[in-house]
Image (cartoon, rainbow, N blue to C red):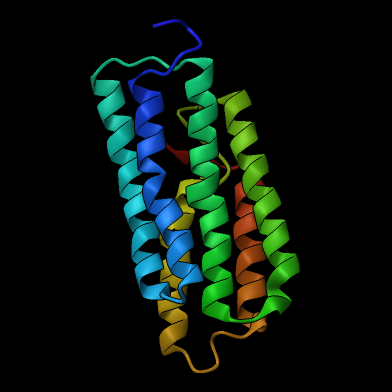
Length: 172
């Protein structure tokens, strides 16, 4: 296969983006519980696809790198944005969501440039959003008046700050 073509890693990135796309679709269908499960599955699919590609000795091509980055953006930036809007049912979190989206894009771009730093990831990896958003929704489900912008906005801004921070999260 030519160096610009798709390898196993590129195809697994495409395939593992399906749970993220499903999460977006289920948020549009006003099914946040299923969307939350899809976000968690997206994290697992990401881990399995990465493990499988490394085990198979697959190398990254420039096209594969771009597909992987876009798949991460769909699964762990766009899908959490749609999920938060669905769960909160409040458009007043639009500005914190925009900050979150920009922080996620920055985090993905920084990783493409820097890669691993001191054996870990600089800033909170976007993959963690696949767990953080459903966990926050569960907490707020059981917390009275939890779905207010007064709760979602700080959550979004804290997660954004963690993604663009410079602390190193060890690679697991």
